[in-house]
Structures are given as C-alpha cells and as structure tokens.
Image 1: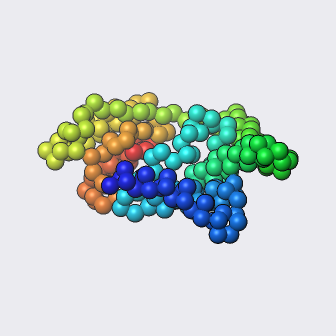
Image 2: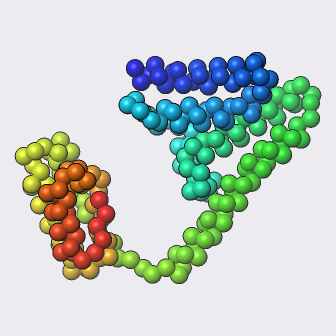
Image 3: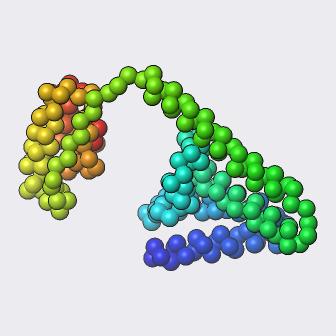
Length: 212
C-alpha cells in the first residue's frame, strides 16, 4: 500500500502543475514548489505518514546551506529546493527557446544567496557563542542490551537497573548532563508513572540533568 501511495505522490506532482498550466496558464516553475511542498506535508500526516525520502534530507551533507531550516522548518527547505530546480529548468527552457534568461537567472541567484548568507551568519554566531559559553561536563551511558530483550516484559526491571547503575557510577565525575541512548528506557515515560518516577529518582540522585 505504501509503495502505491509513494508512486501516487509522484504522479500527483506531475499532473497537478500540468493541470494548473492548462486551466489557468500558471507556469510550471511557479506552481511546482507549492505543489511538491503540499504533497510532502499531507503525506507526513495520518496513519500512513511517511517522511523518509523528502527532498530536505538531501541537504544533510551541506550544513552551511541548511541552516535556514531553523526559520522555516523542513517544508520551507523543500519549497526552496524545488524552487531552485524550477528556476534552473526555466533558464534551460528559455535558452532553448532563444528567450531572455535574465529574470530566472536573477531569481536563481537570489535563491542561492539567501540561504548561504544566513548560514554564514549562523556559523559566525555559533562560533561567538562557543567562545563565550561556559563549559559543560557530559557523561554518556551506553548499556549493551539487545533490543529484543530490552523491551521484553521479563527484562524490564533488569534493564532499568543496569541503566541506573551505569548512570550513578558517573556521580564521582560530577556531570552536568547524563545522556542515555535512544531508546534506553524500555517504557513510555509519559504514560508509565512507575518508571517515570524511577527515572526522576535516578536524576535526583545524580543532581544533574538527564537526557533520554
């Protein structure tokens, strides 16, 4: 079912802009960013939500560019990516037709310049904060428990005991933060009061923050 839905997304992205162009004369380069972003947003909600494969993930290897995600979130980045590709397509299309490419070229340049400028400023600001911020002592706890055993009912008490012992063994180093791996606690702490209070007790014994 999921494969059919993912295939339908690609079909919709092809059909809707073409329909908008034939019915209202809206160029593909203008409708494409809105249509793709809307399809990604709709597909990320509901019982069959599936966010893997969204264009935004293609920029994980380019941290300087993706900094503006802090302003607009993943869907803003997706909109930007599709808009850039639409502008490049418009440049190619106009060159083939012998038309002027000044406008799409200027738009493409602006689309590239804005994220790069914001990313550079973000990097400079981060460097300033790192140079002036106080240091923090962090301990990382990594129990070696197979996932199939960790979430079994019979191993739950033992798992929590191992994690708590490893955490409390860090008390002599006086950490400001103890980090547990995901998912270290084999329980839903928001709804399971017993284990939530247990974790709070471990946190209180350490006298520091605990990140799970």
